[in-house]
Amino acid sequence: MRSSGISVIVVVRHLAWLVLILCSWPRVAAAQAQQAPKTDPVEAAALNTILGRWGKKASWEWNISGELCSGFASTEIDWDYYPTINPFIKCDCSFSNNTLCHITKLALASNSLSGQLPKELGNPTNLLSLGINLNNFTGVLPEELGNMTKLQQLRASDNGFIGKIPHYFGSMTNLEDIMSFSGFEGNSFEGPIPENLSNLTRLENLILRNCKISGDLRALDFSKFRTLISLFIGTIYVRMHDTKSSSHRAMYVKNNNQRSSIAQIF
Ligand SMILES: *[C@@H]1O[C@H](CO)[C@@H](O)[C@H](O)[C@H]1NC(C)=O
Ligand SMILES: *[C@@H]1O[C@H](CO)[C@@H](O)[C@H](O)[C@H]1NC(C)=O
Ligand SMILES: *[C@@H]1O[C@H](CO)[C@@H](O)[C@H](O)[C@H]1NC(C)=O
Ligand SMILES: *[C@@H]1O[C@H](CO)[C@@H](O)[C@H](O)[C@H]1NC(C)=O
Ligand SMILES: *[C@@H]1O[C@H](CO)[C@@H](O)[C@H](O)[C@H]1NC(C)=O
Ligand SMILES: *[C@@H]1O[C@H](CO)[C@@H](O)[C@H](O)[C@H]1NC(C)=O
Figure (cartoon, rainbow, N blue to C red):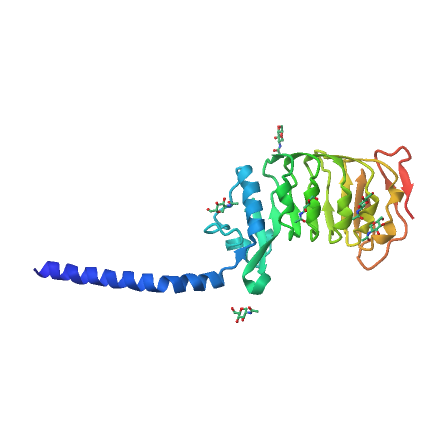
């Protein structure tokens, strides 16, 4: 009798807990929904598709409960502090009154990825930084990459890209850094540098070494490159100026694939 009385009390207590949990759950969930911002659904779908196709998964540090912009991806700390998380993203979750996150950085370097760059890569249009270097990508750069009009940094070295450097880069006017379109293992970009690349007036580094770039560099209006610090074309590294404030006056560029190998730019 006694022991069953105790069990009844225990059961009632458990039931009370259960009722309490059930009743407060919608409120807890609502509060959490308010606290935890959501990843832009178009961007989330694109990233899950791309990484899924490559058989790549987020590590435990991000994509918590299926929310890409969570954990270390949504902290304010820069991704340089997490060099071992790969692949990795960083997000800006300050949109729509801190309820919406856009993916701003995508790190995919050194992941043994191959094949063509997927078109879906153009969907995270809020990307500021894209690192696809040190992979085995081939083919041409897809048109959709031109959708990333906010892109500031592009790292695409050490792959097997071919074709011309797309002219749409001329409209990606926020680019500061095109780190090695080519690389030591050699991308095979060829043809002239598109002349409207001189639209990239914020460019600080333009590195095109080991490419098959040809054509007259004088097509580029170098006077527009107010912030260019370093320029690598062919095998010659040209340091434009040491500080961003001083202006450059003269520059000679040797381009590997040109017959007249030295072009006077100014
Ligand atoms: C994120 O988590 C969801 C749910 O577990 C999963 O479907 C998705 O593939 C994950 N995305 C990545 C990039 O790991
Ligand atoms: C933004 O969120 C805060 C806190 O959740 C709220 O007080 C405020 O009214 C919201 N503003 C808008 C414009 O929704
Ligand atoms: C690229 O592919 C080649 C041949 O398929 C392979 O030998 C090499 O290890 C790959 N490199 C990377 C970085 O995955
Ligand atoms: C992305 O680029 C493709 C090809 O240039 C274009 O058809 C598409 O409309 C673009 N999408 C967005 C969202 O800008
Ligand atoms: C760049 O120039 C090409 C032709 O050389 C043109 O088709 C393209 O629209 C231009 N793009 C921009 C952004 O000016
Ligand atoms: C881009 O460059 C082209 C060719 O140099 C020029 O005609 C065009 O006006 C530039 N566009 C912008 C937005 O500066």
